[in-house]
Image 1 (cartoon, rainbow, N blue to C red):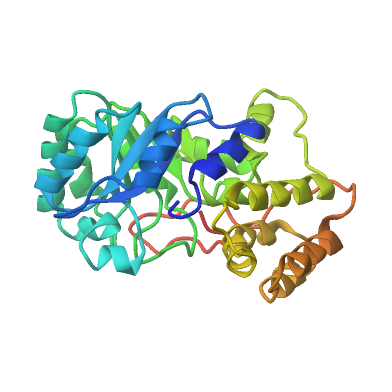
Image 2 (image 1 turned 90 degrees about the vertical axis):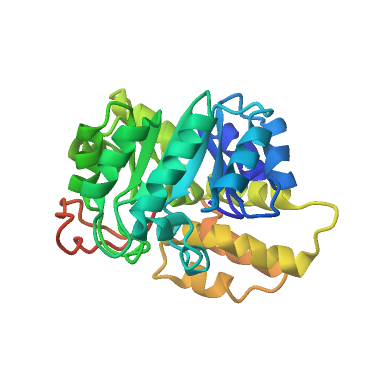
Length: 331
C-alpha cells in the first residue's frame, strides 16, 4: 500500500508474528523513471527475513523492461505487475486498474514482462474496471503463465465499497495452474478461513486489515491450527501506536506533519476501536503529539482484550455479473 507498507512498517510487522511474503510499494514506471530510492532501500535492508516482491505500475513497455533489468540486480523473490490500483490519479493514466479497460495492452505487457523475467513473475489485479473482465483476462493469464496471481474481488469503480465477488476470484483460481491469492475484506481469522473456502484460493493478501491489527497473521495461524486466538489488550494496541510513531519518525521529521502522517494508519485502526466513532472523530482533530497520544490513552489505556474488528459485514458471495453484496469494511 502506497506510503504505508514501507520499510518502517515491515519492521513493525515482523515483531507481531510477521507474514510469509511482503510486497513493496509500487514503483511508478514511465519514460524517465528509475526505481524509487526508498523502495530499493527497503529491499536491500529488508529486516523481515522473508521474501519480498518488487511491484511496478505503468503501461509503457520499454521503460518497464528497463526497470526489470534494474530490479533483477536486487534480492527480490519476484517482480509484480499492478493491474489493480483504483486511485483515479493512477487509472486515468491507463495504469493500475485502468489497464483493465485495454486488454490488448495487458496482453502485450504480460508477454513482454514474461519474456524479460527469467525468475518469478506475478500479477495483482481487480476483476475489471466497471464490470467483470474475468472471461477475457483469464485466457491472457493462462497464455503468459505468471507464477502467482492475486485477485482483489472488486472492480476498480467499486473502489473499497461493497462486498467481495468471491466467485470471480474462484473463477480465476480454478482456471489457472499457478497459485492464486484472494484479496479484500479479510479482517478476522474467521473471515480469512471463509474467504479461502469461498474462493478456492491458495492464500491471502491482506493490507488494511493488517494495519488495523498487526496481530492478524498470527491470529490466522492460531485459528487454522485449532488454537485459541489471542487478542491484544488496549495497552498493547497503544504500544503498537507508539511503535508506529517511533519507526516512522526520522531526523527530518517535524511534529505537526508527523501527527498528520500518523492519521493514515489510525484511520484504519480506528475502525476497530469501540466508542461510536469518537476515537477517530477526536483523533482527526489532534494537532500535536501530546494531544494525539492523550486521545489514544483515553481509549486504549486499559487491560481489556480488543478484537480490532470493523463493523459486522456479510460474507455471502456475490455474483460477479451482479452488484456486490454491501459490506462496511475495505481492504
